[in-house]
Image (tube, rainbow, N blue to C red):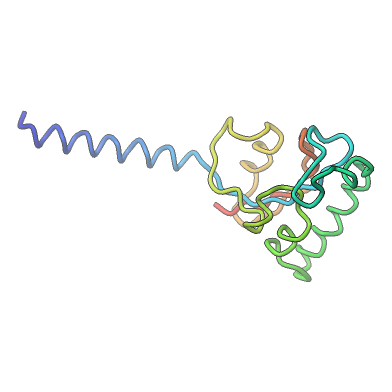
Length: 138
């Protein structure tokens, strides 16, 4: 086989591998509310963790449900709510986590995301980080 043929075969194989990897990925945005049971009790909004350390899981869930209701009823936009209220550093990107594949996120988060349709918003999802709502974007 000609050397150029090897190059073409290599390029085709590489393109096929990257497209199959992309096909196995999802993209999502989320809003995270941390609470006293969260594994890391600090965030960009609360660097010392003073509020997080006194927030119960139930209070975090209540806040997140109200935020979700506002988003679902079109009173607020997901990215704007995430930018203002999420304890995750992704808040500066409107909650956008970018694309990710299996094994890259905590299992409950991953399972919830893969079970959503694009544009759909999850119910409350519990992880070691706190409580989330997730919107699948890709």
